[in-house]
Image 1 (cartoon, rainbow, N blue to C red):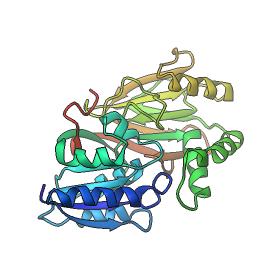
Image 2 (image 1 turned 45 degrees about the vertical axis):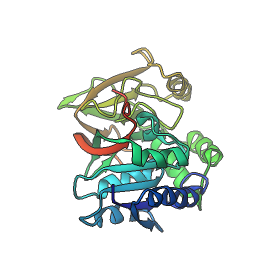
Image 3 (image 1 turned 90 degrees about the horizontal axis):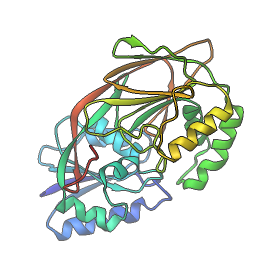
Image 4 (image 1 turned 180 degrees about the vertical axis):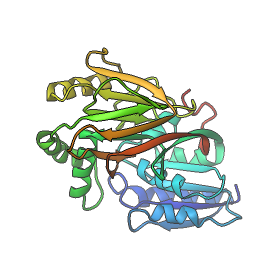
Length: 297
């Protein structure tokens, strides 16, 4: 690596991103890498910066969370390795790829690791790297986004999450997988490219970021007790029996509202909008710098 673009989200995590970026620049420049640092000032700017990568750039490095990485991967217009210094709150992708969450170690990995091919998802016309959640998950992310005024920590999630769960009215969701309508009505649906979800959870414990398919889970009851049961199973990284939830995999999905009520959607931890949406897998669509035993398969 001779030249790299460093794209930094300064409010990722608890605001540690700028210090991590400075550390990363120092390590890279000491090894002879020329670095252009670009700091985002608004949502969507990481995608713009990624689209402006110059021809002589050998790698694009993100300093931020899953949302920043997702934007960068969405913005790239050519095949180029992407490095990750994870300074987010959940760090879902770095967990799946076994990228160190210590900034010094992850910065060293940029020089010592190897680019590994991973899959990317696509929802409507936007790419994503980790997951899509429809239902209460989308409502929680919207509540957090509405309340956010700067850097966040795990504690930042608590009140908006409780408020969203308390006020959310579950609405039915209809799912079609690879052209076949699933014979169940869901009240929460998750389409994932990664095994980890939200840091400590796994709603699809059999998922892999490099298996050429997307995995899905659906909550089949609108009761809050069912949501709690689903969350506990995800925390234990277990699947629920078919009477409480359904699971599967596929390559192309549609999620549609099953009634008149709007169903909120989140993508990679960012509020996306409302159903309906179309989702598909883009196999081998990106390269991430990982340890040699990086992506879980």
